[in-house]
Amino acid sequence: MNSHRVLSSALLLSALTPACFDLSTSSSSSSSWGGGSTSPTPAQKPEPAKEGRPDFGVAVSQADAPPPISGGTLLATHAGGLVVSDPDRDVVTVVGPSREIVARVRLSPHDEPGRAAEDDAGRVHVVLRGAGAVLTVDVATGAVLARREVCAAPRGVAASPSDASILVACREGVLVRMPADPSSSVASTTKVVAPDLRDVVVSGDRVFVSRYRAAQVLELDASLEVVRTSRAPSARTGRRPSLAWRMIAPTGKDHPEPIVVHQSARVESVPDRPGGYGTRPGALGDEDCPASPVVRTEVSRYGDAAVRMPAIAVLPVDIAYDGASLYVVAAGNGHTRGRPRVLQLDAREIDGASLGGPCPPTKSVLDDGEPVAVAAPGPGRVVVQLREPDALFYYPSGERLSLGGPTRRDTGHAVFHADSGAGIACASCHGEGGDDALVWTVGSASRRTPSMLGTLRGTAPFHLSGDIPDMVSLLEHVYTSRMDGPELTEAHAQTVDGWLSALRAPRIAAARDPFAFARGLALFDGPRAKCGECHAGAMRTKSGRFDVGTGGAFEVPSLVGVSARLPLMHTGCGSTFDEALDPQCAGFAHVPAELTRAELGDLAAYLSAL
Image (tube, rainbow, N blue to C red):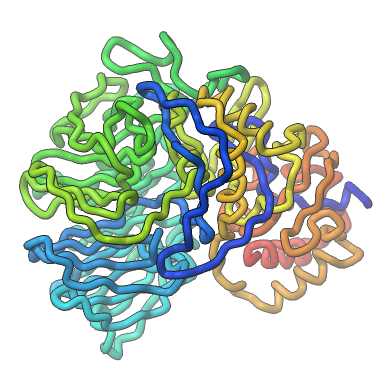
């Protein structure tokens, strides 16, 4: 093998990235509407959890692994009812104003219903994240009106009353405008905006879209041209915004800008020692806020400052506004004893907030269950969607409505999303099983957060340098030590291994130029580039460590879904494929010098559609 021919664009599996795993193993799964059966893993009984520590109980796994938590799956309708998207069970449930179940729409396995929006005609449009489609439902009857293909990876959706359309934001970077009435003959239009789009909000003649990993909000005009870009501010110096989990509509005429709940990440070097990723006495704390882990939760208004939430608000996957207060879902607290699941915050706290200001006072409105979404049907009324058990929680009445779905409890899923006890979860950096697009300094080394979506199966040993031989060792090294998590039994480790290995690769848009794609494929596996010698097989990787001129000998990463995890290389030097294929970034022993500019363009076309 000629190591200088290796074409390693993007995910050099990062050693020591904060919050969590670089791993693999194979796992089989089966599909059914109920999501498969729950299988107890033969197990040692774990020690009872202490206050502030996660409790995973007896290890169990699902035959059909549940998807990572995305949040934002609950919609309050104009009439006071609810539309509940359930990606775990592939069901959309319509609940009436009197808390009666109007209809259950059972979808195909892995459709993964997500965000929803209601138009003025009483139609609700639900994005199907796993199917690249939009489902339209009559909210009064629950009848399915249409299922329309929209893009490779739809994420956000909003109704646009001015032209009777809906706008769909897609992760691959396009905004699709389509008629709200599925019987309309008006053609859909597609506008290229920016990669990694998340939520979309329409406010009068203004359109806002958020970018998930960049933690940006873009303001668009009526023709969907970008007129302003705002990166979510950080409420503390020495931190940078990351993972904008949810953007919601403005809170009134006096405040026409949308609100975003996001994370902020530590800029300084992360300690290369036990407990280095979490909280510790006297570290990054002050008298007004508890000590901060390397990632924490913040709430900000577009173009304004942010406020810090307490470090206990781990994995802020959703936010809602009821006319006076904001409600933040801390999905990472769903398995941690003594931690609030949903926090209430006075909305006025984010107006005129100053950088570095104190943490605002918060109130817990839910202390049990596994919340994944929140909605506000009216002033002073809030509803929380629970993943386990499958139910709705009504606040302030405290009533619960069971939605009757089968359990989707999976210990691997729980360990990945749960606060380790130090104010951080694996998903804090590996959001939705992917990555935060950040390059961390761990000790003295620069390490890009790796994605786990479809890249792990059969790729042991783990870490960039290949120094972790198996799952048990990795959990001890990262989760128990650096994240200050509890010791896990071998049975728990097996479920984590199985769940992560079952993560599906991201849906990628087809190549824009199929001829360039075909030429790139031939070049990739051909004698000039010889990329396929190391990036081999369906996973486009093979076991082995090679020095290609990027600072050491590293494991060969999988290139599956590589376009969904820009920037590339372990230092993040390749914000585009052109940059990643430049020897200054990729290493002079990495990309053959004799390749022409046209050939490099063909390689980029191939990689972008993997």
